[in-house]
Length: 215
Image 1 (cartoon, rainbow, N blue to C red):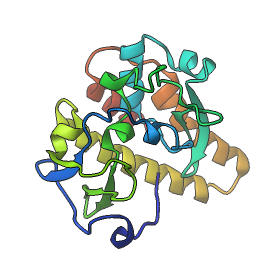
Image 2: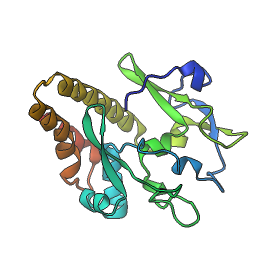
Image 3: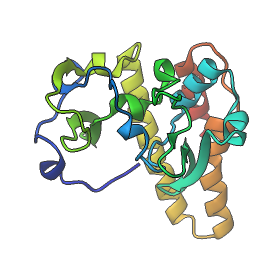
Image 4: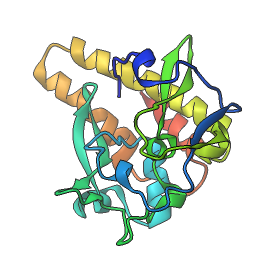
């Protein structure tokens, strides 16, 4: 999701790479689930997230949608899924009774990233830390790549950039489409191509780039 932000107001003013140390260590969030209860509809799910959820839960996209685990909303001009939060502070539907994440091993990328963010530019992106977002005090230093805990991080980062650029281009096409019918067709095409069609359990990246080539 594209956001206009002032890094000077929300970060320590530094940008980081995957090998850098950042103060995000929080003791495995022991006794805290605040960030899983106050995100609204901001935890957008990219195709890698859906592949992970499908493999981890054994549920299809339609099942996750039907059970109210995810929902659909407009974001940057296209229809995208996001984690659905319960009402009255119940938080993410994947929280267990103890307030722990039941899908921690295959949680979405934005959940892994928090309280880090990404800023794009010059054909890539860098990480920054949102210093006011996590309630934990006296956080310890952790290497970014360890914090993310994603296998083959180089491939994942290349995917993140390709997906970001694709969504940006699609959002532009929707705005320039003119006719309402064409705008709806473009807005829904992302959902049809990258979410509704099931992924196999084999290598995600080859499946993703194959679909990207279709567009």
